[in-house]
Image 1 (cartoon, rainbow, N blue to C red):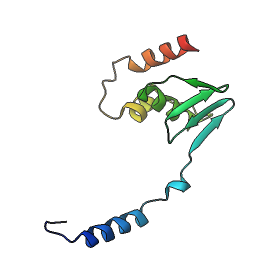
Image 2: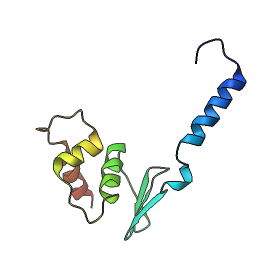
Image 3: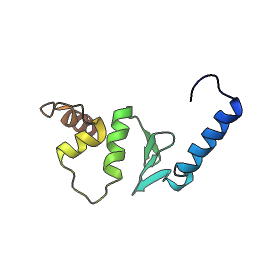
Image 4: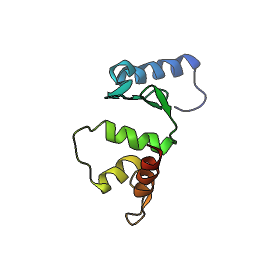
Length: 105
């Protein structure tokens, strides 16, 4: 959209884009596995009704795994899914996160 533009046109274009995108209410808001609950809107996790203190990356890792229950994930798939494609496969960040999580459990 080039300047100058009419505000009404901007609103109309935004409305079209919103209609094209999938509705937010169609997406899961919560993932529940046993006594573990992940709230995807607030990015919080609870277990046995106790809040878990997670970093943003820790929450992303837990979400990645919770969205794939009963599926074995390779180290590379987890790194790609949580950290994206810009990672060094030799780095041990995944192992560090898992070791820290195991200490907190």
